[in-house]
Every structure is written in structure tokens, then in C-alpha cells.
Length: 266
Image (cartoon, rainbow, N blue to C red; front, side, top):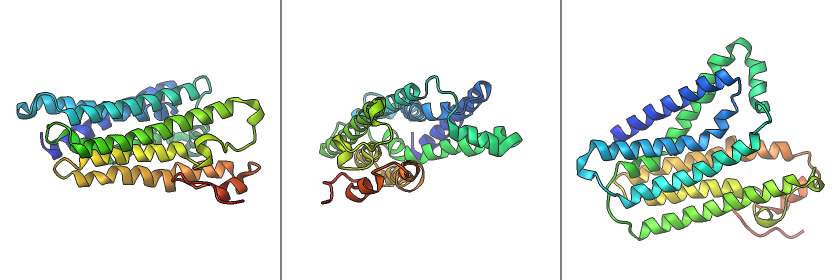
């Protein structure tokens, strides 16, 4: 199956996925499930286009190491993220962000949430998943050295995101740390090791995509996710919440915002 067809099937999948999710959220009156379902949306999209490619195009049917490798990487990332957010949100009700939207949008909340929250997430998904779609529609051959470089970059990112999240969760569970800044472990080298890790994983998948026809277009994916984390919903939102925490200014001055590096001298 060619690239346009792959993109079409991915778009149909994303539209159906987030529409069904919207219906469920409306019934439950809890839009927080959008956060939980974000990671799994990548898993569903990746596997749908992989399976459709195998079924519709006998010429490429069979085992494609690169395609199954990337589907596996997306699955590991999406499951870990979805499970973590589910555990974090369990029993806490709807996230305050969505509660605020309900209050501000009033009677238009249902309609606006469908387009501005759920379908918008589908659009972001389609941009982020660009390198995956190029890989799924591409040549099915054995892995080469650049695939292993991409895999190594992905593993570095996965370690940063997983370990960073674990260290943060452990820190927050200790009542003694309430109202303080985490500046230990990976957090002493970057203020956002989890965000750095997430972006790095997608740069790794982009490197794998470079083996495919038009693979360079896949740079859209990591550029979008890195831009979102640096300038939109990741770092800016997190740092605004931390501004009034004692010690934040000093931590901010001495610690790299994104790319891990040694602390600046006091």
C-alpha cells in the first residue's frame, strides 16, 4: 500500500478512535480519559496500518523486521504512558483542566470539546505519527545499521522518560517533599527528563524512518512533539505551576531546561 493510502487509513482510524472516545467521555462525564487514551491511540493507529498493509498488498506481505520493530516500540511507549496516567488519575474525578472548560464553555462544552479537544488530539496524533506511517508503507527488508542507531536513540529516550517519571512519582509520594523541588537523580541534569525522553524516542523512530522512501518527511513527527513539549503544553505549563515553589528560581538558574547537562556553578 502506498503512502497516501496509509495516511488515509491512519486518518480514518484516528477519527473513529477519538470519536468513540468522545462518546464514552460524554457518557461518563469525564473528559480525563482523553489523557489516558493518548498513548494507546498511537498503538491502535500503528497496528491498524501495519495489518492493513499486510492484508491489502500481497507483494509486501510477510515479516517486515523494521515495521514490526517500530510497532513494538510504539506499543511499549503507549502502554507505559497510558497505564501511568490511569494510575495517577484513578479515583480523582475529572481533571481540573476539563472542569474549567466545562465552566467556561457552558452549554457549548459538548460540541466544543469534540472539536477542540478530541478531534484536535487526532490531528496532533497524525502529525506525530508521520515517521511511523512512512515506515509502515515502506520497504520490508532486514534491519541495517541505521535502524540500530535509531533503536539506540529510542532506548536512551525511554530510559529518561521511564526513570524520570519513576523518580518524580517516588518523590511526590513522600509527604516530607511537599512544597519542595526534586533535584536528584536525572532531575539534577535537566528540569524535564521525562519530556526530554519522550522527544528523544520520536527522534529515534525518525532515524529508523530514514531507511524508507520519503523517510525524511518523517521529521514532522519529532519536530511537532518537541515543539509541543518545549513551547505549548509540556514545559511551559509545568513551569508555570512551579513558579511559586520555594527554591524554584535557584533550581531554574542552575539546571538545564531540556537537554541533560551538568549543573551551573553556584
